[in-house]
Image (cartoon, rainbow, N blue to C red; front, side, top):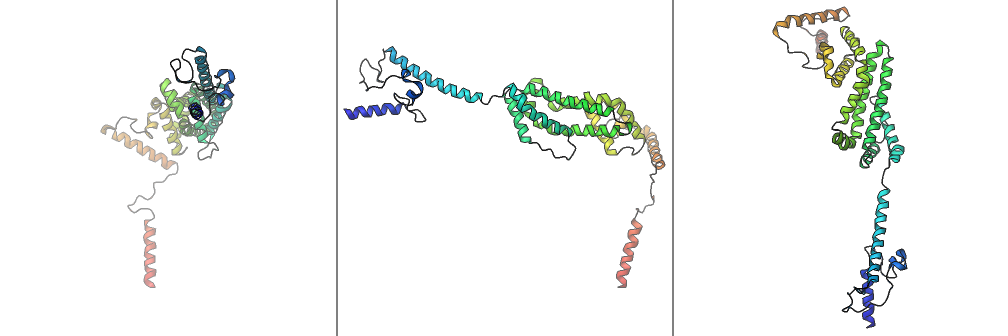
Length: 334
């Protein structure tokens, strides 16, 4: 009988162990955490009978049932409390965003907006990408988008003031630098904020981040300078090589990207760099096209550009021929 009682006691303790092998039975780990008054006292097992339910407790004893319910509730409360505290440790509050996460993004954006082509920027793209991802997951997308727009707007207003102070002979070149620098920065900024773009701007605002940032440059820089810039471009076009062809092409294509309707301000200028701007040529205007080409050739000649030798033999061909003949004669003499 004593061996059977010991086996029953051992089995009862084993069934009360949890998945981490903590004994939640009487006198075990549960008594240590919950206190003596929350668990029923330990005692010898009672035989199952008509007035017992097989668990050692009478079904009609309210005190025993309450003790079991109280112990189970306390255990569940401990587990829930542990899970809640673990979750709260990963929450990013608005204070955390302002003091920790946005300063990192602000510094990286500054460097991207002011970099020159080919410069090395000592920032961690992985870290910035991770900051954006965490802020989006913690519902800070709206605040982050607002901060980004404000940051870039302030930068573009400074760029516009610098252009206004530029002398006319440097105006075109500086506008080209500002445009190229900004468009280059967007190639890095837009991918870094891809999560915000996908889950906030496209979903809630029905817009695209790149379009919004291009619009900022249009409103704060290009629109303020287009009426000063266009006469200088037309003047530079009438004077060959006053500015480099690549600079002219970059500016014209950039203006067309920002606002296509600006083509109407100088259709002939835009048509030299962007196809299908002018209507198709017609046979009745061929003489006019030829006259324009002749005028351009005369202007080039007046500015010191010669047409070169117009014979059928290419320039330098005679020298090459004579040199090869001399080599052949020397080889024959030897």
